[in-house]
Image 1 (cartoon, rainbow, N blue to C red):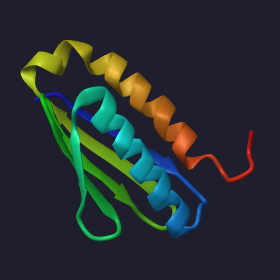
Image 2: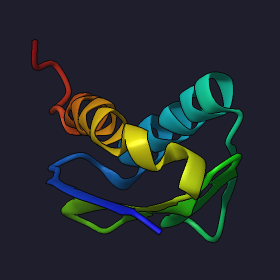
Image 3: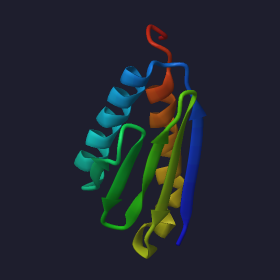
Length: 97
C-alpha cells in the first residue's frame, strides 16, 4: 500500500489548529467521501474509499499519515501535492497573507 506522510510545523494555539484541521476534515469528506472522526483532542482518523489514516496534532507540528489503496496508487503524486498545499494553508499563522 502506498503511503503518504507529510509533516508541517505550526505556531498556532491548540484551539485554532484543531478548528483548521476540523475544516480540512470537512473538505476531505466533501471532495473524497472520506469519513473523519476525532480520537481525543489531538488525533483525527480518516477513512474513505481507498484511503485510511490519521492527522495528528502536537504543540508545534501536524503530521498526516495516509495509506492509499490499490485504486488510488496511480494518483499518489497528485494527492500528496494537493495535501501538502492544503496543509501549508492550514498551518499558516493567523493574520498572514
